[in-house]
Length: 121
Image 1 (cartoon, helix red, strand yellow):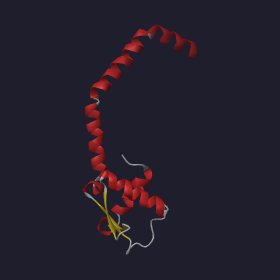
Image 2 (cartoon, helix red, strand yellow):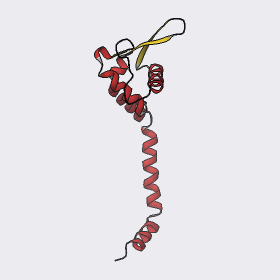
Image 3 (cartoon, one colour):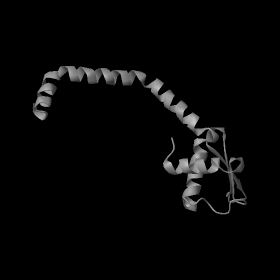
């Protein structure tokens, strides 16, 4: 999952030609983030597999960032991750639902009395 700044960077890269941010072509970083925040987001996105960063020289200076397949289709991958999570947790969700029903059933008289106190008439 990504934070809002990382999502903005993904959208920014998605709208660039060839899905590529090149230091030589785009001299300034986007207006919505500082340069440090932009580079931090790119490094995070690289760790998550959304972006491939190219560096040059001994000091590994940043040269460009390109969206990977996962970065180009991040909505689909997020949807797949959510579905996978729900499939893994379906038994927990059913157990929670049954517990809530049992709790309401066990305290139905108390809940009814409380509702009569709150809504007279």
